[in-house]
Length: 449
Image (cartoon, rainbow, N blue to C red; front, side):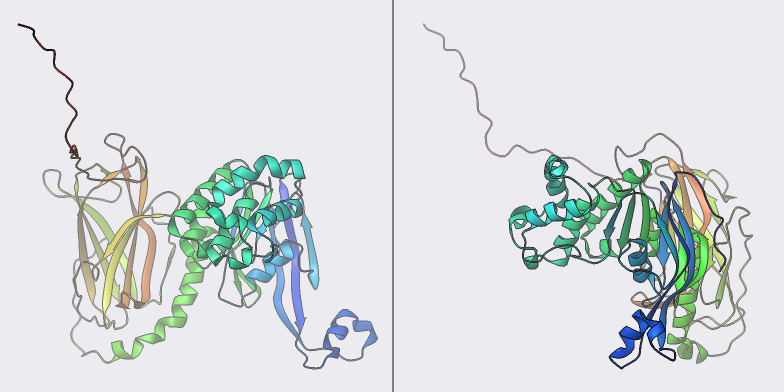
């Protein structure tokens, strides 16, 4: 894949140019010497190429997500960017301070306490003893590991290690933060704190190189995305587009899981439902194994006579009906249709599907044209524009194959008014205050007769 156009200026923090990384796979002990000193040996050693001709740039304030299957070279790429590994071919140009969460506990001495490792890690990141002392309380407060701070880190769980490592990394004034699946081991509350802090730091100019198997995390953090497959770049571009291509590829690999069940369905005449037009504003970002195509969708609004609309303005308490139509190209044994409401950063606000709501759809055959309606009462949402992602899958809730997943197929807006005081959704909450125990009664004045 050709390199990106060369950049200039102080905003360029990282550039990888035609980077490749090879490891010897010879079984003989001389293989490593052959790899280190090829001029001293005749013949060619057997090599495994973990990376092949990877090029990209990272600028100040930009976030680049990296996706790919296990063994595709993602972690190797981050280690080369961090300077831990040297590329076999190509070059790396880095400007500015880096902080990395590459492997849990990397850079920590297992015999040292958490306190000692904070001081050690901060010094490795370039902080002076005085700077570390000034930030120590902030680091400890963010990590929130309690008395374990004074215990050897070899006694820590993986989540505690991640807490401490992340807390150090965000307090060392790094220009680039390298993250390799570290957030996957954190509890939900701490992950939310981390994501919130990452967005704050991005607004102040932090650049991020982020590896994750969570497509939603990649979307929430990344401006662009790089897809690696067997060490080579498959795609580099907008996050939604690249993640969609990656997930489509993964889905195609898994499609055979229930194909035999679908092929055994009884042949019948196709069912034809009224068709809906696809929205003009749909970006086209979708993935799936191609057995189904979501062909159209619309909102049905109960404002007097029922009206259709593809970009309505909704308010708290509105009864919302979304009608979705899809065409079936190959049999589905156990179809599931669903939707997801996402905010502007790609985070799921709420979602549901036919199976979760207790509705079992019948098996479908090629030629069926189906229509499904979802009805809900609008919760109290923060004023913003939200995307409605639609999907059809085949299987069960715990094991299924995506047939078509269309990102932000429709959208709607929430106008200012009755929005929540904080967060995405305003909870329907009743308050009841009861006094426990008797209220003390003040001494009343006595009358003397």
